[in-house]
Length: 67
Image (tube, rainbow, N blue to C red; front, side):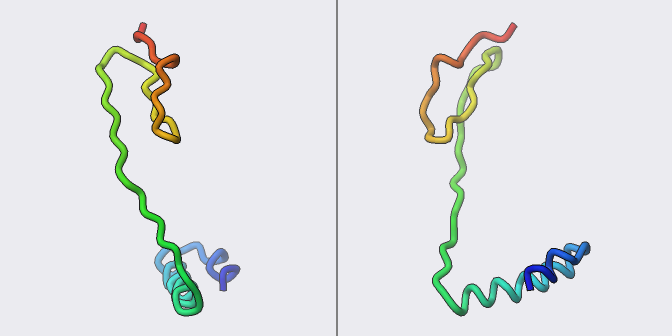
């Protein structure tokens, strides 16, 4: 079924096949539903290097003043 879904270019038609696949997963086993929390970071304009670290650790050595 997955090969069939991958061969369909139309997203609406592909979603119908994927719904069947997801139904099989739900019916036959434990499904772990991931969730994504919203992550905010605050920075003052004029600074660079305020990228969000994957573990939410501040990386002060990468912060600098914009040229």
